[in-house]
Image 1 (cartoon, rainbow, N blue to C red):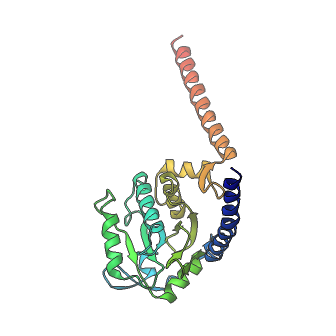
Image 2 (cartoon, rainbow, N blue to C red):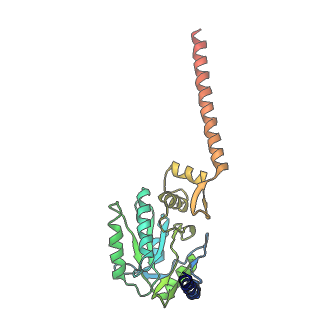
Image 3 (tube, rainbow, N blue to C red):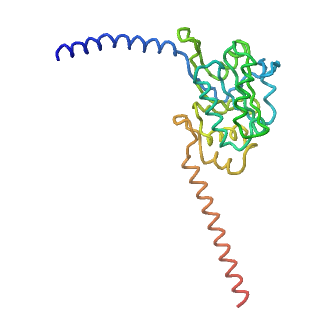
Length: 267
């Protein structure tokens, strides 16, 4: 029995330093990786990229068209995280009633300069098949290291190549911009809630996308960065509730007044 305990203690004594070393290595690998939100900043629109058909384009080709822009960053040889993000965004779009390419632009940029338009075309075809809109469009762009760096720096998307793992360490997020290229919202979630994505698109459009209910939602709900979601703003909700109550009361009093007026006329 004593020998067994000694063996267990010896094993623990050996594994603790190894675990500590692995933890330290992982910490170093992910140092400098993450999101540094640039809300309100203008991204450069003169950056050159290549679309999924191999044509040279500039970011400005997708802006100033009266539509907000939903932007994601991936790389097409990513072993898991990028596919999880794009799958999650696709599921979120099920709760968004407008087609990408119609009410808003959908752009995915590869942050690997090694990615090709052919790989981008495969991804574009894959995800467009999953969207239940005939006129949907999803732009998949590749580019040079200089263009990628300029765009990721402007949006605060920080990533790095990890040589030991032969892959990129990177965050996952949906970035929403106005039609002019102003960053209006970050949704740092692998599977953003459809309600939140819809609200972020309406917010970025400055009311040109959506209906009265969408605008009422944005008035009563505000984005909470701690929960990465839109949450009820109690004061505004009370103001709306008070206004609705007042309108109902006025309507009821008006009906009573009309009824009394008719009775007086018949008397």
